[in-house]
Image 1: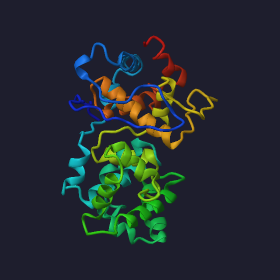
Image 2: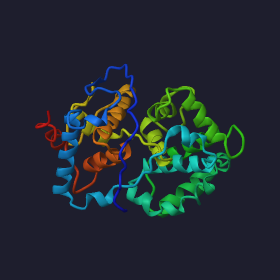
Image 3: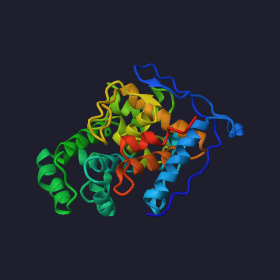
Image 4: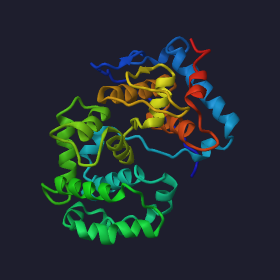
Length: 309
């Protein structure tokens, strides 16, 4: 993978309204980048310490951070190039990468159109459960990219394909995303929340983290609040998790919906305070918590914040 070249934000930050048991320690709101020397010193200190720690643990870490282009959500959902197959590919990739180690999926990434029928949700929706079990599942196992939960996930993906196929050919999925987006407050985080939890818009098999990953695959700039991101944000006391039994060095919180949303906005604030994309901030934090050689314990992560104001 090539090194990520991140672009600075030039637009104002969004106001995040979080009413929840989660205690959001940092303030959400418009960030004024004209006062970089005075504003958000803690978030810049944390980011600098994290980068220094990674440099000392894995000098080549920047070469392992993926590139994500940043796309505005209103532009994305209004683009006719956003076909159903593009959306279904993003969803399928998020789902299988959530079940199997990413390096195994990356190895077969260019072949995934075969088991997912050219990423045609209407075709995938017509597969029988038997076909998924006898054709699609063995395809992954043969390539050593299977997992214990993959069968159940593929069946849920089929249910998602059914749900996304109820409109005009080639644009039913985009219409679904647009409707879910219009039903919220217009932020990428709100769309991930709707696709992952809403009674009306939830996609089978997708929680908030996987929905966010799918939207990231489409180019939206947001955080995927998985367990490694939660560990870091909690260890830095940016979100106070109610249910976090730290039994081991890598134990993650048992997060509520509101705490996951607070985590997403915390990463957004880190990104905006340091004038980097949310995707880049998310990827670096994830790398620090997940990848062998760089992998930091909760104590390691907490230590990055001790000297920050």
